[in-house]
Length: 103
Figure 1 (cartoon, rainbow, N blue to C red):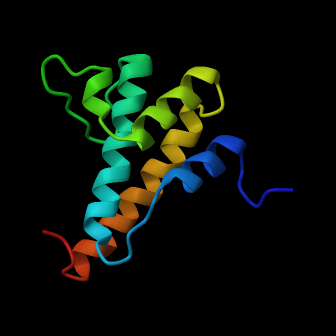
Figure 2: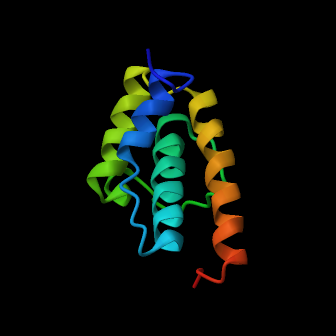
């Protein structure tokens, strides 16, 4: 049995691609991909995400964003999973800022 609350939460965790040498870039990259994929699936702006005019599938750009979108469309990742990671990434962002590792 997985230690995660859902398969969607575990999927997102496996897609994070965390770079410990650049925690700020890691938090921002994962947040942007997650929020962008959710916006493309639902049209809902979350996590402070503000899409540029004409934001579309090509805007995701990286493989991670496309895999997240596919998992959302298939139903593997649900809204609660996205909000779960939003809370974690928000807290992590605060810690990175307090540590002076943001830019």
